[in-house]
Length: 344
Ligand code: PLP
Ligand code: COI
Figure 1 (tube, rainbow, N blue to C red):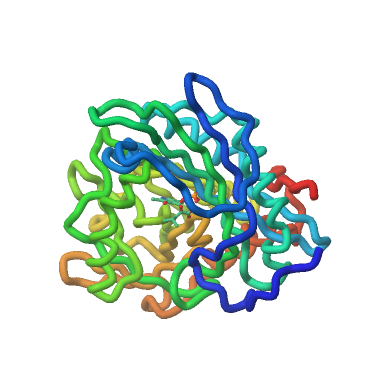
Figure 2 (cartoon, protein in one colour):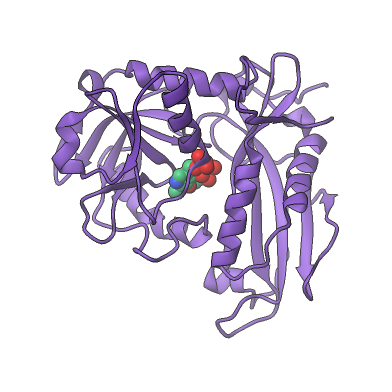
């Protein structure tokens, strides 16, 4: 497969237009078969619910090239499942599993020359999304929907690249409400988070860190990633909350920590200020973020530091990153059957 001439090692996490995207339309209770198209533009009616009432949701996953040239997807079944839970919450028609998987695979296959080569440090980000379109004014679900999947080669999400330390800041804004849409990948959650991200950046951090919206005590997640913390007793803990996104990466990391590294793992509420002294390593994890070690967290005008005074990457974070990325890139056995080869 002849690859595009990109500077793979220096990509950032930004949109690069590839040749094809997949599109399917829902109307009158039926899905079209779906097809590959070439235009990156979408033309929608000005009354579309996506434009006014944010009836839109998305997913994010990556494809990587294995040493043998295979193109691997990482746990796409979980993205498909999560999109189904989101569409139900937003009163959108479900994208049938087979349509979701075909959309993802066709978009990757048609753009195979854009999938970064093995060892380049880059990957192909896949963005399936569903928008409510068509003439509308009142607050009601859209009459028509478009499911699209586009792909873009990407580099690291956070500045610094690869496995580099990031800092987070707790901002006095909530991402989600207790019974709101925090656990779903609704576009509106992200518009609501833009200001917190900017405020975090203004404080010198990479991203906002949210506390629970009811009591503002318990760790929730970062703006674009879940959280895992390693306690000084060796337990790896991740927040349990009904208002955070159920991250595919976090679920995988917790499995690897227990099975491959032998850590005790817990999913429970983490009272940040009460427990901060017990935290040795702190990391953010997600498809875009992969596993990003967190050096420092700012809260109430004070910086809290973790492993190595916030200046070094902890060994457990490093080991989890190595294990996870080796599976994702097909460099090691895949004992859980997490990767799926895209037939070319
Ligand atoms: N939390 C939020 C708010 C996210 O946007 C993401 C990214 O998808 C994650 C967590 C991580 O989820 P995943 O590991 O499934 O990509
Ligand atoms: C992802 O990690 O896939 C996300 O959706 C995060 C996004 C804000 C880039």
